[in-house]
Length: 431
Picture 1 (tube, helix red, strand yellow):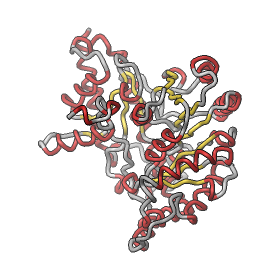
Picture 2: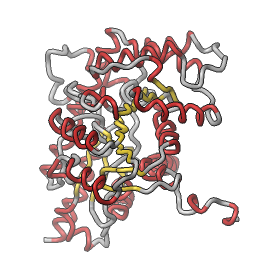
Picture 3: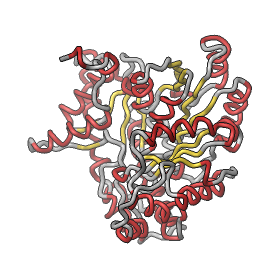
């Protein structure tokens, strides 16, 4: 049967982020205790006003325009104009069934090569490989907060891919790193991209989950060459709703037109009720603003507590600045892990899951070297409804109580403790 399958698919497996979720479900059905820190899914409920809007529009059953409902596109444009200090119109917006689908269609429509900065989200490389795109990788490091050095971006444009069309996928706050960029860093990347005519797909799906609400879009500094990618899945906790947004500058309208043509022959249009509900989300209101402040406060407290615990135990990690991830480095325990015949990140995560019940993802699926002992930890396995209710009881001019995470995010805290306990035993055996 293999001869009937396109050769580009023969070695492709299900996305690791979805596979780990299915593995956790399987283990739980076997009666095992599992701490789900693999899949990056917000634990919080969708804001009530957005849910009500979906309910009110549940009977809307007509096909909508391929590019999306005009009122929604207008709301998305106005949202980003205000937040990101840019100037786009409704016609600059494309709505899709998740930013993941839009990214795939963009790479399909783009006639050129792809630049990725490792570590990067798992689907960037897989999609490029599916489409037969040439990939250029920039390897970042923990000591530089996993940030891209513009000089390396310039080298690719001047040497490895000289004279070719280039698309650089930039994601921040980062998945899997949880880190972000300063204004100065973004300006320098923008200057390099402009000089070498590099298009930037700025994946800002976690932009509203910047823990200190300091997110800045690179489109502010490179408006003519930046496509902003966002959606409802992370900040609105609506991953299963599947609604993504792309904002294009006027100069890149041919790309948007090509993508729209592909969309018309594939997904046709996004679910009508969800598009109507998304208008409420992007127009916003005070309750949605408060919701974001509270969810960010919880993520900030929990993420930093986890990072501090892990760092104190000898695991290298940068404090999170947005989203809900930590990218952790176990290299301090390399000798002890080798004694347990753990020599790469996949073996490391498999052993941790088997012996502690904690599910995390290996660094290798995020574009890191196979032998590097890194992993992504998503601190999301807690009752978001309960945590949010309790956060609302604490005034926003105060910090959350010291024991808040222990009380209301206990599974995550326990999972981190289990990893540390497991490593401590390895270190003790290695001494």
